[in-house]
Image 1: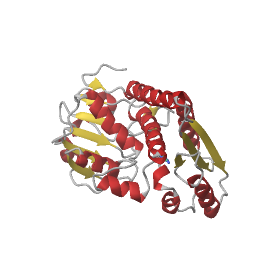
Image 2: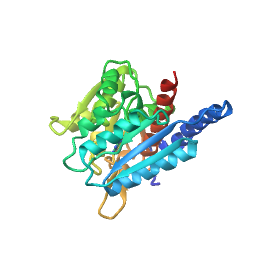
Image 3: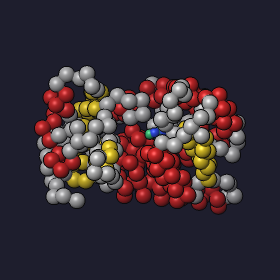
Image 4: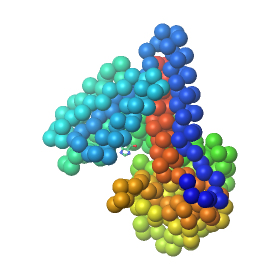
Amino acid sequence: MPQTSARIIDGKHMATEIEAEVRQEVEALAAVGKTPPCLVVVLVGEDPASEVYVRNKGKACERVGFGSRTIRMPAETTESELLAEVDRLNNDPDVHGILVQLPLPKGMDERKVIEAISPAKDVDGFHPYNAGRLMQGNPTLVPATPSGVMEMLKRSGIEVKGAEVAIVGRSTIVGRPLAALMTNADATVTLCHSRTKNLPEVLRRADIVVAAVGKAKFVTADMVRPGATVIDVGINRLETGKLAGDVAFDEVAEKAGWITPVPGGVGPMTIALLLKNTLQAYQALAR
Ligand code: GUN
């Protein structure tokens, strides 16, 4: 780790704490003879990055004592075959969480597949029902990555209420739901994107900057106000094979008050919050 002045937000450590909390709940269920929550991940085709993510999700389930299953379907699977599988999982009382790994192979309508997942089992929080509930300030299942960002701020004691927050990237997986979470938490939010004018100027006003653009080292020191909190959601593979976030870590860390590393920042939190979502779905289904 290079010399920095910013305090590091240790996502890996926080994720370990959250997993311990989830594991305790599973043990409490076992003590009264209940079967643990079960997450099913559906992986269509052979995207190498997805393979890694899916494997990590399975390992995390094992660590906390969840049941888990990965359903692998070949790249040639038709949309109706996938929809039939989702329908089976929706109706399987032993399955509490369903996650269809994205991206899906070309030609498949991701929107249609996501909308086919029962909102009660949609542990990604991508279904329009869950997205709408979040937008209205009455959330049910919330996407894991933005949830993980909120949890990191909370566990670091960084105030969101009244803060100026600038988010770079308006994806449905991160930027948009995070803007809703921040709004619900009384922040003043600017959701920036590729057409934003004077982006550096907008970012320099922010108390909290969140980078979720998918471009290595996109946020540089000149875009950050001294003492600001900088959250890096990016995971980019450099030509050298090394991982880099969306933030130019070394230079920004000299200026920021708080910063998340990559790896070891938001990534592990996403997995931890997915486990929490699966537990939440299980509890709601049991009611
Ligand atoms: N692909 C990249 N991130 C995600 C995620 O959070 N959920 C799913 N289902 N697929 C992804």
